[in-house]
Amino acid sequence: MSTLIDQLRAIVGAAHVLTRDDGNDLSAWEQDWRKRAHGHALAVVRPGSTDEVSAVVRACAAAGHSMVPQGGNTGLVVGSVPDDSGHQVVLSLTRLNQVRAIDGANLTMTVEAGCILQTLQETAQKAGFLFPLSLAAEGSCTIGGNLATNAGGTQVVRYGNARDLCLGLEVVTAQGEVWQGLGGLRKDNTGYDLRDLFVGSEGTLGIITAATMKLYPLPAAQLTAWAAVPSLEAAVALLGLAHRHLGAGLTGFEVMGQFALGLVDRHMPQLRVPLWADHPYCVLLENSDSESEAHARTQFEHLLESAFEDGIVSDAVVAESLQQAHQLWHIRESIPLAQAEEGLNIKHDISIPVSRIPAFCAETDALLQREIPGVRLVNFGHLGDGNLHYNVQAPAHGDPATFLREQEARVNTLVFDQVHRFGGSISAEHGVGSLKADKLPLYKDPVALGLMRSIKQALDPHNILNPGRVLA
Image (cartoon, rainbow, N blue to C red; front, top):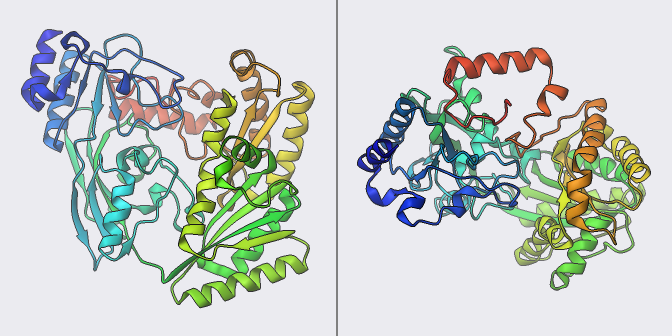
């Protein structure tokens, strides 16, 4: 035990090997963001280079200690904290935080895994480019974690998930070897696409240490609209209209249920939520235009005129400034925080074919109300790409902690069975982690699951990389 700690100190420096025996508080690395789990690590190791990551992996593998790669620790499925054995090493990648290169002609940026997502956005913007991945935790999550979970966010409808934004990776394998795949090529048909194998694998197949990401020209204008709609069917119809009127300019399309917005209004009244009280749903749309703000505003006006004429939209406002647009997006991003203020809740990150979302919600809403009278549904998310955060709150006068403890398994089964019946996925953008690992065999195609197990066995035969995650 002490021999491994000494080896790790020799590799990364004593200051970057944290243990409880040395009086260090490891809670920031041992507890997940939602405070659902609290593990016990042998040590937290903070390498400062890819070579150091490689050496740490070799040392831990030789000593028989499994590792838990960790970025910003903002995940929602308990996928990046240690178990309570006291045997696992947390491999914190936050010191790998350099932007290695920006290639303007190739429209790429090569960055290390520990770079904060917001830093990537700001660095790209200063260089005159757009890096479009955007999500609520962007001020603390890292690009390595984003890639490990194939993060989505608010602009997937236009730019895709993290996988779609990645052109290459640098990865340390379970044997401590380094795969250099940072070329930044958009075409390379020389065999299996290893990049897509590691993206979304949640640190179970290899440790991402750097990535080459796509950049885009900065849009000439970005406009945001907030529209009230009478139903989810109307929201889906508005999405179709938006695709026709805005084309590739449609970069965001979020839906928010009345109760979800009511929680923001109750717990954060300073945000002044518009239009929510008299409408079942509101939609937040973003139009990015390469021509001019005037052109973008004209497009929005034509879209909303058509939507009003068709009875799809009941009321709408268009942000008059960038500050107003940020305020509207801040309301949307505050829903999870407002829900937390309301009390512990059961979260779902699901995807359904867009055309089937209204029927799914109608049936599942009724099912949950019938099975658990008084339950409250916090429904919001990325309707543009079919991803809902279909969360379940305790009845108004019930105890949230008791509700979570007694009803979570039942609610998950009811919701996941419905998702499966409607041809959806029980994890759209948050990953599987350990929270859903035991559910995967119930809903994943058995052939696909068998292939996944074969890949894990081939790449990590001794199960030292994030064991118990994705595959139970």
